[in-house]
Image (cartoon, chains in turn blue, yellow):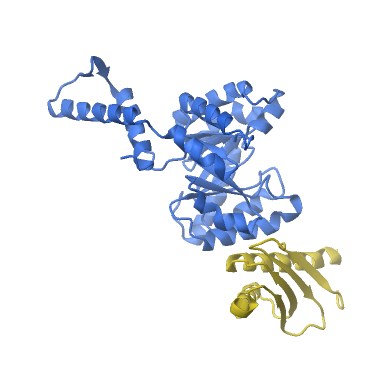
Length: 292
Length: 97
């Protein structure tokens, strides 16, 4: 059962106090305090303590607070987990996730920390990022490796570099990874988010890409600038017509239940479980955006 | 290691940050904090208290600290002090090898 919307996850550099303290005001569904690519090698320690203290002291309200740690293949990843886990973020984004073992190791460390700190077991989620051929090859076992896995993401730049694809603005080269991680997410019953759109000034392009990934079935997208939040939310906001239609579907199914009728039709179209599920999804987005 | 001076630095001079320089030396007795801040008149005591609290948590009793504040939140001050202290202590470990 999904409880929260994950239309946008805003990346915030983990060593920038001004940006960290304002991270919650832009209205993204999630923020991702980044210890990885946004932090230079000689500032890893500094960012780790800064982000930990921010988690312990700054109130981000209902925003989901995620920390992207460094990959376990670096000297920083495990120390990041050890320090950040104790400040109880909502989730840990794990870059370069490549195998079931990667997830199991993070799960084990978080389980120990939760026990030591008296946190609820399983309350810190794992959000793997698929960024390599190996990671994509193993994605089905990655999403099922732990109950903590709540969202799956991918990193377009690293992935295309790894498979030898040409990275373009249109992103045709991402069709395979998008299709596969979406399928894996649905098999596991978790959320799936798209990679970032790197051209900050091209809002048209962002909207085009967001419409496309919404059409595919994605739940949302990582963003790298506050100006990208609103356009993405707008794409995920249902139209008045869609809401009206969804409401009619839900009431038709309710009436049918009362009448104990097996088959329901609306405007000559059969209403079955998938149609209801889609209608519920529309209403969930409408509710979250304050439209109903 | 006797007689060695160990220094560590963390933070920046950007808005909402604080640049912290720490120095351990054998001659240092007690905690000596030099604070520079645009809001020193209003918040100087609070900032110094935060620095002292952080040092206390880290178990540090003898240290010189220079903090150049640019309007940092308490949690930022604390993080920068912790980083600078640990960098200085790590520096010592490397020296001993």
